Image (cartoon, rainbow, N blue to C red; front, side, top):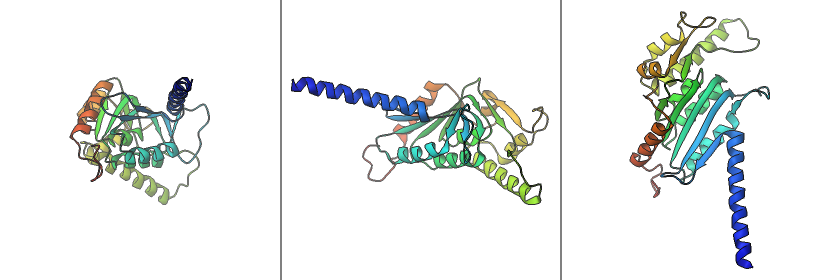
Length: 243
């Protein structure tokens, strides 16, 4: 009887853990792979990156107040050996997206990104923030100047703010990829491609040839690269015996 109760309690615990993981995946797009060669965490950036303002409920969003503490938890969790970031995003809040990208770039945890569908606008810094970046051939990335919705003041200070924000993005992208800052600025300011905007749309091949993304690849390529990073990287912490 006691053994039966133990089995019931174990099954209940396993079921509860599975439900918790399913809820986590549904709410904030996070999955931890347990039964695998290495324990990796999957983080998805989908729809629009939501920043300081709440978007309408019908919008698919990635909320930065969820992603930031998740990244901190991943970095300090010694059981998690690597992080894969799956991107299919139209962009969103510039400062929120850049803040997330800075956190990812500063992690000691091995990181790999994979752009599927789209990695547009502020999705570009997010894609290059990982230690290795991949893009599927059918994906696209739109590079364009910083824009702002709502009422803005038509004064020199506003233009100065836009320029400084654009410079921050260009510096980050060029520092975390192989594209020169001058070339990235040329793509941003291109007037001959987008009908009602400035900028450039790059498919997978072009993103790699421009040096923006490291490699063309699929999910299996990204995971293989992440395993390689895990196996060849130094321990995250001096006293870490799990690396």
